[in-house]
Image (cartoon, rainbow, N blue to C red; front, side, top):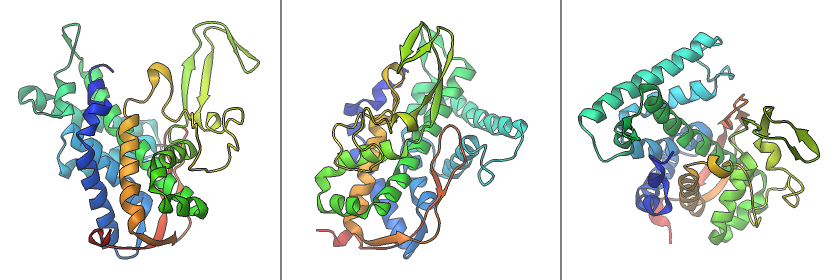
Length: 313
């Protein structure tokens, strides 16, 4: 984790402000170029954060479709629309494709390092030892997949929440200073990571439930983010919520490495989209990915009217 930690510090991410803003504008411009209809989940929410994270890794634009397909096949293994197949062999082949791609990338970056995150990972050492192939390639897979899939789910789910709560959409449109709080509420509301498993290292008691050392625990993030003992009106989407101590990014030593980047991306996109948005409404039934681990909306058809970027005051 420490190998790439500095890349995700606020000071380092600040250097990406302009690049992220440019990608956000390009994304909304592309949305406008489609006329007045698109599938926001597939056409907007997945492509924008993928462009951000893969540009940080230093991967070429031509590889974006391949990374998107592999990521959806990995996280959507239980979804008939996204899975490569229904067997464990199909899933293992998806993982093998990831490993083939990043194995080639590692070899290239070790021969010719560049100024990107991929080179940092490829040439990393711990206690003077190079990372093994499994460690190196797994590191890439985690950064490339978790670095965009969770963010795309938050963005698509965030717009859906605003549209189904028009008072909140109007409030945010009227008062852009609420953007940071609104994005936190979108993330709490969507909770893209559904669970993790942990093992108790000592006997303890949580909420009156005794847990013995060695027992497995399911951490249910959607449940935690609707905890009535923590959140007032937990089932209400409220962009003014403060404090908002959600657990969507995890907690403690496992806190999401890219949390600040995800926030920046969501804030930039909605800061570009909402001032240009004249009207938006559903253009069909949304559909959610079938998943037990990570996911959100896989289809979100919308109709809209946007103004050109140059028309903004």
